[in-house]
Image (tube, rainbow, N blue to C red):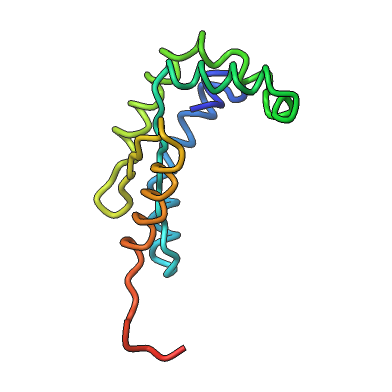
Length: 127
């Protein structure tokens, strides 16, 4: 999403990637690698609050990038590309898990829980 919205790739580059990404994910899965796709979603208002906090905290200012600076004005473009991404890449074999992330601690716990639930394990194996 970041690449096409910010002009970091051409329309052709984006089209090629979107045409190949599901095959690439299938190859990863077929090789025995577990793929967990997580999208942490925050509201526009929460993003603005976080960016304001970063800008005003001398210990966090280094986190702010030029891409971040434009994110609020490009919110609708990001949303459109997010919808395209989900419609194309949210597949049965490789689904997305959307985690509401306005509350960071709760979001992080939910991510950990999802990963643990996504990876099967044998409770009877001795370590």
